[in-house]
Image (cartoon, rainbow, N blue to C red; front, side):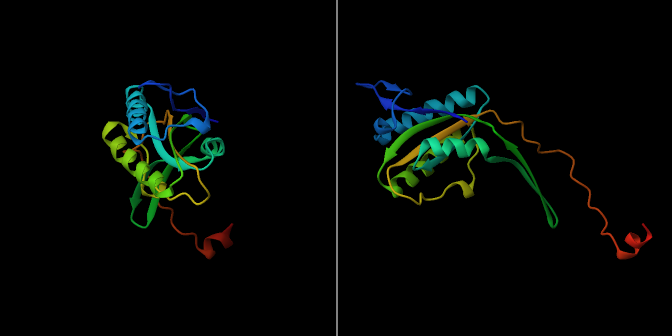
Length: 170
């Protein structure tokens, strides 16, 4: 399971990843500042990251440890070849807390946009969804080491359909 870090303000302009869920940042400016630091750190260390919104960071971290991450998707006529990796996330940085689902989703979209310019942001269109349950909502950043993307790997060969006659010969 990823280690969960709750980012809080420690007086003045100092920010710390050693806070509690009830004291997570509520300032958009501070949340963006932390995100830029985390995403830059991830990029410099060859890590990927994914931005998300949840209602319970601990539960979401457990889910993230069991989830699959899409590494590549290649269309080959009627077939689509998808490669996945499992258990790739090491840290969950909780960077913002809000009672508004619209604000959480808006911040998430903004951070994804910023993240794509910084490094290996692994969000895709299917990741951006509105929270479904009650507030507070937490915006988080998962970081971890992904295997390299296999862009030019061999494609599986199409198998000839088996006929009933060839099965009868066995």
